[in-house]
Image 1 (cartoon, helix red, strand yellow):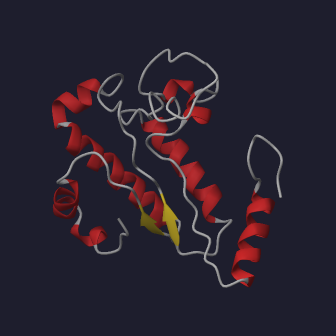
Image 2 (cartoon, rainbow, N blue to C red; image 1 turned 90 degrees about the vertical axis):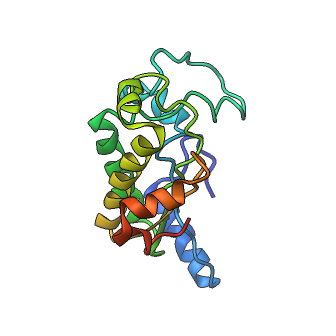
Length: 171
């Protein structure tokens, strides 16, 4: 369907969603909002949003895609980027769900967000940022899904933080 390295455009995605729908398959969008942001954070436009400064621009392997490409959760511009990504992708799918990933957050607190993490703790800083992303997803009339990988007790803590949202999530 698409042989471009840059991925699919909105028309390609809508065509694929229509095809899946015709077969009775629900196509659920999945976008990286914490880790796995190699392509975005290596770009000149968004490299300032990378948690770790001066990550070398190299051809990456499977493992490189997981490491050192975490968004800076202390920078408000990170939420602006995520808001734009969620808005753009939400209009391409008929599914009520949107998977925001939320995993592979290896670098949170190891760079630009270090002072925030020292102040709040890693789990609370993660949850605060996650709550902001969830609000963006709800603003776009989607039900959020995500992968939780930061700590073993985050679901309990997450529910304590936002009980009104926790009942509407798929984790």
